Length: 135
Ligand SMILES: [Zn+2]
Image 1 (cartoon, rainbow, N blue to C red):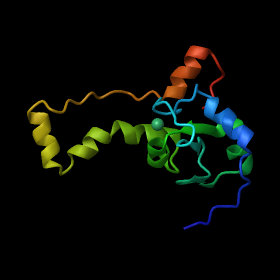
Image 2 (cartoon, rainbow, N blue to C red):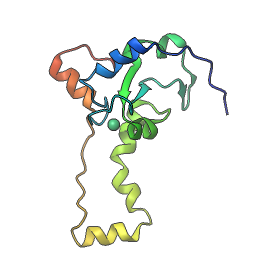
Image 3 (tube, protein in one colour):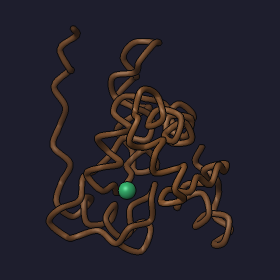
């Protein structure tokens, strides 16, 4: 496993700007973020899954900093945005695999699946606010 390169800490003032980037909400799921419980995600991961380490220029800039809840940041990990999107879209299938109870829940209508194309909160935000796309 590669050792992450040492990176400079992001100054508190810059972190606050990232927090406010999408109105204090998670850039991915849109949940309201707690001022103390949020995490700064790198849209282009620092350690990429397949192509090796990203350059400092690619990852250490405001456009690449995303306010994120812990769950989204944890689930996204070092994946690209499109891989993250696919992983979320595949959640019902993943839950079904070998999960007898999930299938019983489906049979009894306790669980309903709603397959859909995932649009991240920041994508909708940028569409509505006519800002330049960062992806
Ligand atoms: Zn989230």
